[in-house]
Image 1 (tube, helix red, strand yellow):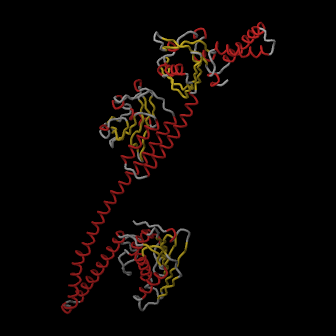
Image 2 (cartoon, rainbow, N blue to C red; image 1 turned 90 degrees about the horizontal axis):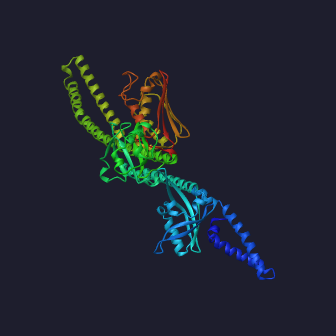
Image 3 (tube, helix red, strand yellow; image 1 turned 90 degrees about the vertical axis):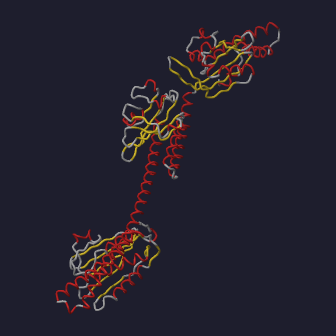
Amino acid sequence: MTSETVLSLPPISAFMRVAVEARATSVGSSGTNRGAGLNNARSLVAESWEATFKASLETMLDPFVILTPVLDVDGTVVDFTYEYANSAACVENGMEREDLIGRRLLELFPEHRLSRLFEMYCHTLDTGDPLILDGLCYQTECCGEQTVRRLDVRSNRVDGALACTWRDVTPEFDERQALEDRVLQQATISRLSRFVLGGAAEEQILDEAVRAVAEALHVELAKYLELSPRQDAFVLRAAVGWPEGLVGTATIPAGGHRSYAGYVISEGHPVSVQDMSTETRFTPMPLLIERGVVSGLSVVVYGDHGTLGVLGGHSRTGRHFTEDEADFLQTVANVVSAGVLRRRGEEEVAARTTELANSNKELEAFSYSVSHDLRAPLRAIHGFSKILLEDYAQCLDDEGRRVLGIICTNTEKMGQLIDDILAFSRLGRHDLRSSMVDMDGLARSVADELMELEQGREIRIHIEPLPEGFGDLALLRQVWANLVSNALKFTVSKPRAEITIDCDERADDILYRIRDNGAGFDMRYVDTLFGVFRRLHGHEFPGTGIGLAIVKRVVTRHGGTVGAEGREYEGACFTFTLPRPDKETTHDK
């Protein structure tokens, strides 16, 4: 028998009267319809159906009661008395049937008034409208502990009384509520993550996080406490449920057992509190007590190298927080940590960018000073030395003329060194103007230009077909010029210079290579080749030691690498790579 069917029944006496009369009429109509026969039939049917009906009610799994109203002198319903209760109702109420029948409803269960169930019973009795309630929140108190149950309730008015039944659906309700909460928590985490990735500022992230915690945990208060740099106090950075004037100013001590937040950090895992008034693990702070906080759940917000703070939700009622809720809160804390660290990292990068820009301005000022202030005395020294050599050579002996020659030569080298330093410093201060570059034509053009300066030498430069590259044309020309001139310089002592330029096309990049049969180098010093002012040979080969450093700087800015191999007196091979044109990457360092 379903709850709805039960609720359509009249009180026992009325129901049996109707049922018996209907059955007796059916029996009597099949006989002679004499008065004695009809009365006998009715009597037999009444006994049979009364027993059947009572047996049906007694075997119901759900409680079933019939309540009759108690009226005051004005005819107002002030209570109900139990006229009938089946076995399930007696078990549910924890009473024997004889102790329950005739007792008043509110006398036994005043919670009916608190849950407004008594008021709704009165409405059904007055109007005749069936009462259908699903998931009624019904609170009871026993031995000082409150219990909340969820009830599905049905009630009908029958002949001036109420037929009532109910079912405890607390497990089903809790399971359904837990599922809805998990869905809400997942949606909250997703929304907060998108908010963080959307570029929100740190304060906005914290404010959104505490709002999300309050909503998803169904609590009245939520807060984020940030640990001070000295780690001796917390500052209230964001909150829901606290006055705005406290945010940014309220502080509490961070000692392990001196505060809730301090205790959470000392434990290192989520800490739940069901009743602050009986808490002994730490001392509840006025920040919580003054807001009427009874229960709470808090977790640590970790940073890259320690603790950022504590995130928590709090309720003004006794509350048991589940493991799922603790996992949710920790996930929110992790999202907050990622967002805060990201914002702070971006701010640090911005600060360093500003600092770098200022340094570049200082470097430009220094370059201007080098270009003008240092060149002027060098030109003077070189100029006066030349005058002495040209106009007063007859007044000087051989040693004097030799010394002046050395002065002129070294001032020229100093001027070239200044030019090279300025060229090297400028490489990092200008944006790349990248496009497709004909590397084959560029290498051949550079080789032809440099060959014009090597008249009288026997030189063979063989260039294999080279694929296109992607980069800054002017800077890549500088790379080829430095590498080819390097090969020409270190083959000057060879009767016949042999230089070969080719490449390897690989999956992610193109490796360009230039080999020569020149002086070579000791591989023990290969790591120093591309450094500024690094020279592995003596003064027999001209140069300032900046050419290969420039090559490395340019190639690195294009996202490539440089390399070298060699053996003394047997030649060298220099290589550089560039990303393939379909995978170009700019590393503008």
